[in-house]
Image (cartoon, rainbow, N blue to C red; front, side, top):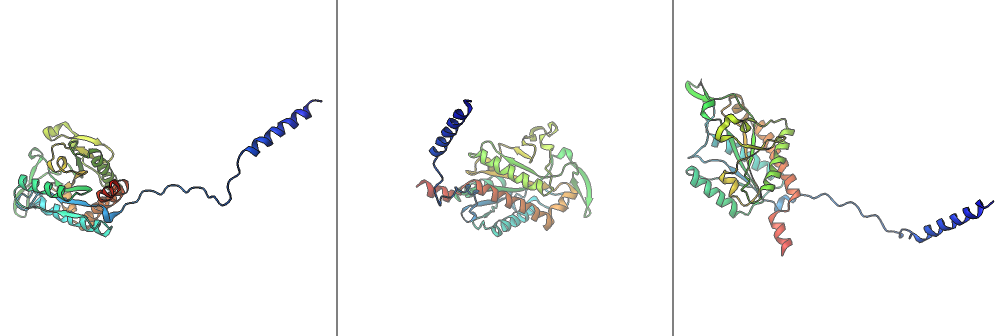
Length: 273
């Protein structure tokens, strides 16, 4: 017989609690989610460094073509692709002269430009021990079909090592998404002094701390060995416009993603005043 008074008391308490909760204000909308960060390509400077020089042209391909010719051709395609994507401050970095002096000048130019990112373009070869001989164009030339694929290098001595690794992984992922595979021979003991630490096995990022262009540049920096030109099949592939555009597309997409995560130096400077 006492249940009804107890039930009535419970209802009274519940109504009091509801009355204490403020009703939502009329016309007040919920706050929309924060917008995803966006890249401002007009204020983001990318340096596309052309590895080597005409006087110090780097490796020689299986058909006798200097590496510098491959580097320059691919770098030009990348530069065009970046500009098409709105990165009008992209800078194609060229130099002349002998190896070390020209490299020092390239690094000095890159630092003077106060860029947000540096991508150095190269093409790979192998140690002499891995080469064989074949005849091409009536000439005996060295080649090696043992290893193929790209590789990406960073230096732990770079002042923004983490930024370098972040972009390197992005680039490796974009290349992988296009069906391109990185070479794994740099992690093997048989490479001896040329063996490198594999930073990321998913995207083919290696550490090469001693590389001057990477450790002395004052911005995130990566070196892309786009492919092996001592490999006879890959050499032909690297010379095709279709493959160059595939690599350039991967670089551009990686730059766009990296740009969206890191404000350009010009933007940072304005916000710090």
